[in-house]
Length: 317
Image (cartoon, rainbow, N blue to C red; front, side, top):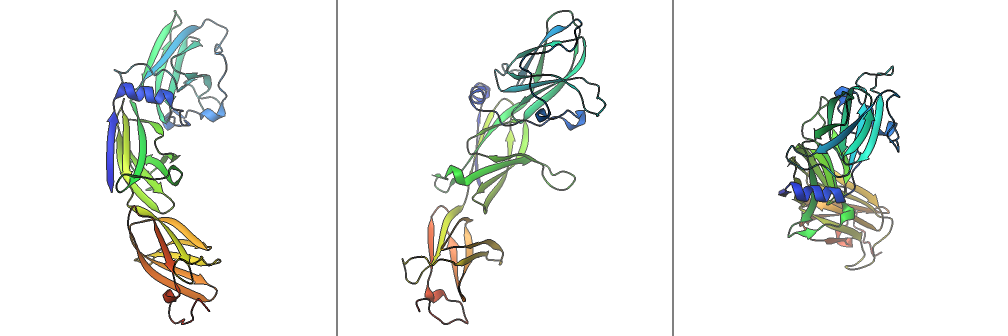
């Protein structure tokens, strides 16, 4: 597997993320038992916790301690630190955007800032003696993924998707899925750390790699799929019309079936290697071995000569 990684430092990263839409965020520290955002509607205006004396609290977030404040794309949630009757932390206030101001009564709160799939939680104490400021350091960066064929041949975007997982398996032995169905060149905001990335070119060609995201940086990673598009058809003569109602199976060298379909044509993407095609039309079975060369589209025709023993009938009859 070939993997190229490029990193863009802080200022360009912030500019790029500010221009790109945020992915859905529902990642809150489980230990705090914070409710999911979908359970609440963000208020249009900030409502005081109580009619008693309140203070203005201005909340801001940074990717790193040295980076500027994040200008937009944040989701703020302020919780009471004491669980309610349902065992969840009551949501006090929410806001979307960059730096935000809240009117809060004196007391203790838990503040969560979400930036895409990156987030941080901080406990704050409101004294109530004037304007107060609190800043959260997300320790986050971004990840942009792409894939090519050998020779830097572009892969059609509609055939390429990525999934991002935790690097380490959980108690069940599986890696928790963080973000599914990521489009090529979409920026995903993540806390700094190492992630397991799965690249799918079509339903069969898969590449796995571990990629590290650095705080304050945009990591651009490109993998190389050693695969090719393959189209199969059963014909009576070379270059002839494909015969309808043909059942297709593609097997690996070890006999594993990687595709089953029915139709005049069978099209898919296969990793490089040796395969066996089996085609059945009416009572006749045809078989042929072939090799996938990465980066080269291949049209494979099965002919009457490919009739599998013990059949000796000709397709042209």
